[in-house]
Length: 384
Ligand code: CTP
Image (tube, rainbow, N blue to C red):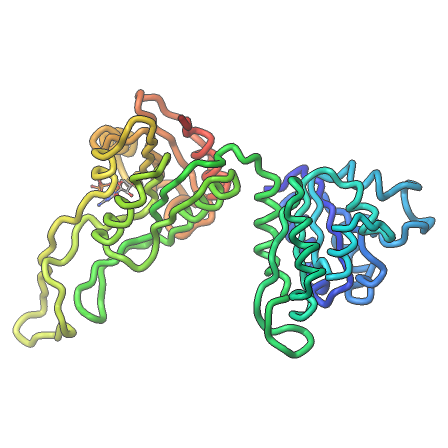
């Protein structure tokens, strides 16, 4: 969440400006207080009324306008802001920002901004490829407070296809979160398993479970925001494939978080052709065999300094079961969620967890977003 954060959105005159009102709405929805500074040309693409309505504040677009709250908005706004997002940044504005030219509301504000800045360029592919633009982007990317995003490839407003599109607003939003998060996990490698496993019965069928991977993805996102390098093992794979990939990834990991719902058993045989209905019996028996336990395997391989975190989704005797798994699998922490709790478990955007630790202690948390749960889990991991 961005509750209490002050975000300054700088818009310049490119067609991608039409997407920024939606981005402002999402920032406000996430709890941020948003103010807007624009170039004059930006208002050819998106109106002052739209920006003012969505942000709830006067738009700063004319340095000398009498509507400005202060005589020196270009100084007070950067002081107020925790972060500035310049999107779209046209070739013209990139060049000015890199060269220190400050001749409008956006560039004067940027020139005084010393806190984190995220820049999302957008332009025609030939303008993008121009040496001047490339040089400006390189220069800006070297400033320690700047996250310089690249353009995306795809259809461009001028009718061609190429590199020059602004990154999608979901990407920009994530970069805002990331730029506001202290890099406390920089240099750390994290292995995360997530989602269900699938065990094939025949070419058209498999055994799986209801896991969607949301909790694991939220963890991967939070690790990345904190500066860690994340290996995410997730996808349409069997427990044995997941075990192989997780074992390989664990070798040089500092932390492993096993959020995957791994099938404990798989069919003894995988039919090469589709299993047919038989006339002889109305019942069918499947013979299953045990899968490797990834958590237990990694628990055996764990070296001093490595942290291993597991999950336990239980329906009864929750604490006892989770504590037993923690010990048996040599985990440092286990995240318990109960299917008894409404809003917790598979597919929900929320989760209610209890953290159990190696020393027998435990911490209970209320129902909260999986994003917030991910932050809580990471906060409880002691890095060596
Ligand atoms: N786990 C794993 N590999 C398995 C089974 C589980 O890595 N084959 C991990 C899960 O990712 C989770 C933890 O072990 O982090 C506990 O998973 P869970 O399914 O609750 O435990 P099981 O040991 O399978 O116990 P049971 O199914 O009997 O409750």
